[in-house]
Image 1 (cartoon, rainbow, N blue to C red):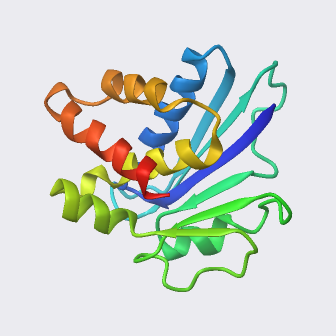
Image 2 (cartoon, rainbow, N blue to C red):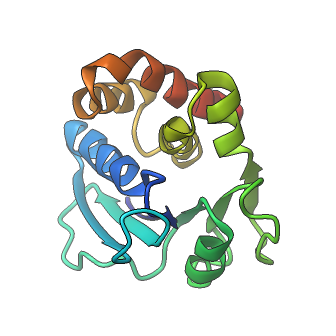
Length: 174
């Protein structure tokens, strides 16, 4: 098993944090994982991309070449990062409110990720963890319990309860 994931959006949306948590969860389950990231020079609002490769065996090339799943949290991210998705088996996940013009791709899941975070948790900053829950459910790579533990280890202690709600909200949304 080898899966390549790409999480994309704009700076401040937390896609890098979500990718790190996903990779940590995979390692906790005994899998191999590599995570890389790139972002624009802006503190917030610039392009942001994080990639994760997860495998049952050694990973010799730590660059995503043909992602199995792409998460796009903005229109710009969707337009820029979906094109090398595997057309037959790839999955494009978009925040339906922030990606109004969904790219023409055969397998798309539209979820109001940011809206769900705002309405159910009171803050937009939980959108990345909602998205993480969605990716956990749709990928089947790591268990929800393992991801919850990784989230709890990574987020500030006073936000653990809200983050647990966020990951479950995303998981149950699809």
